[in-house]
Image 1 (cartoon, rainbow over the protein chains, first blue to last red):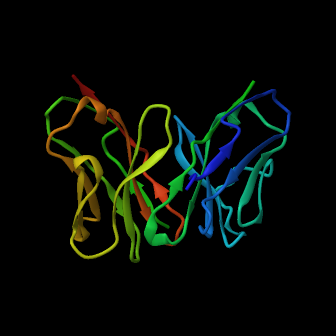
Image 2 (image 1 turned 180 degrees about the vertical axis):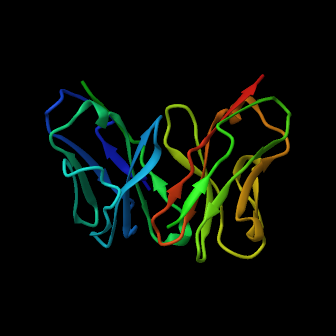
Length: 113
Length: 111
């Protein structure tokens, strides 16, 4: 089991550019979650999917953020245009069932300059 | 809506000291409770979880937690910490499969 796979591990981009973060959940897991971690705000749930359908996107900070899950094995989080305040570590997690807890990916450290 | 409070932001202990990290949650329904650990520069890893049954839950690396329903608490304990336990610890509550995390407690263990 390769775990939850995120790419890239690090991303440095200029303000105004589009950024796409990628996540491959564990096979057989039917829920996928995107979190953002910052020193100031801790771990924030941005959006989550169940069976590829977005269930709750109330944590998405603004319209510049969008997420998709076109199939059970892939999800993207896009920021367009990016701003310096978007700098954070973005984690993807997946689970099979609410009883099992989440398995987290290694995260993408995003720096917007 | 569910929420989690961790009252200790930074705890500093010497090796072999006992540890207790506080966690209180707010949720009106049945909850599942978790503790995660994040070592420096790494992702979150599950320490232990509570679903039902025995309120004293044992996890990995000698950690345990006690669910006290009347106090809405799920405190993490370890009898004797090691330098390698230096990390950030997150309590989490999962009511509707949208897990919410506390702000985290940074634990520093001095050798």
